Structure formats: structure tokens, C-alpha cells
Length: 173
Image (cartoon, rainbow, N blue to C red; front, side, top):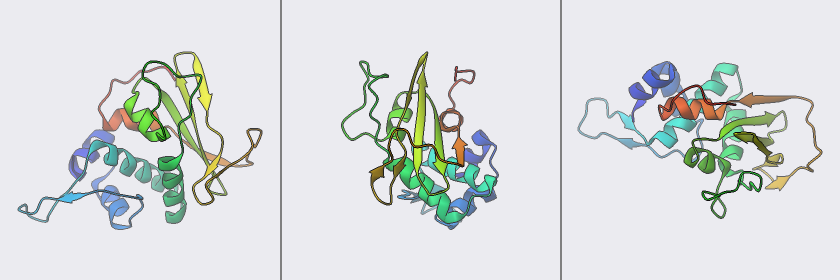
């Protein structure tokens, strides 16, 4: 996948995607360059394209660069521990929420980010719902299960996944 393809399937402008890459808004980014092509275009796997698209959407929302990095770092690190959603394709040991959501494409998911850089994810599979606890990638701690932030932002990560991976629209959730 490259910048042009990601722009076409998500509706995000190419210059916005280049901005995300040039300003290093995506943590742990793995890109390759096409050495023999004019301009050395950047290429990446769809899972990286997914995180780039998330960063672009957060940038469109007006989130500061460091807050975008914090949100995505927390999201990439947040462990998936889902007893209510467990089944034959249950999470692997130490699997992140993002890895589980990308692997289980029937899961709807929304990521939340509060004003202090804590992140959590809410999942839905059919009628089953599950939420992680609020997590800080900075301190590697979880908030108590009854914690309620005063202000938070939500990002429909399942919908972005569906765009990037060209999955059928119209899933429940």
C-alpha cells in the first residue's frame, strides 16, 4: 500500500497523509521506499496504513501532535483481555487491542482518549460488549474500573479498519 492508495480508499487527502508521515505522528512506523521509482514513494502494510489513517483523523479533529502520538502509543500498547468475547479465536498472550481488532474483523471497536493521555477501547461483537480499563502508556498503569474522565475523545477504529482493509460496510455497532 502507498500514500495514493490509502488516500483513495479512506478519502483522506494525500498531503494530509504525507503531513502525518513527515511530522512522525505515528509511533513505531515501519515504511519502505521504492528505490528505483521517481521520488522514492513510501510503501507500508495495511496495518500501518490503518494507524496512519487514525493519525490523520485525529489531526483533522485538531489534536496536538504530541497528543496524537500519545493516543496512538497507548492504543498500540493497550492489552486485549476479553473474557466476554472469548471464543475459538480468542486473544493471544500479550496481544494488543489493535492486533485483536485487526485479526477479528467482526468486532466493532471505538477508542477513547482523555485529556490526561489515558486510553481505553470498547468492543462489541453481536450482542456482547467489553471495555478495557483506562490505560496510560506513559506510566504503564490502569485506572480503577470506576474511573470516569470529565472529557474524552472517541475514534471509530473499526470503521477506519474497514476502510483501509476494504471490508463491507453496514456491520452492526
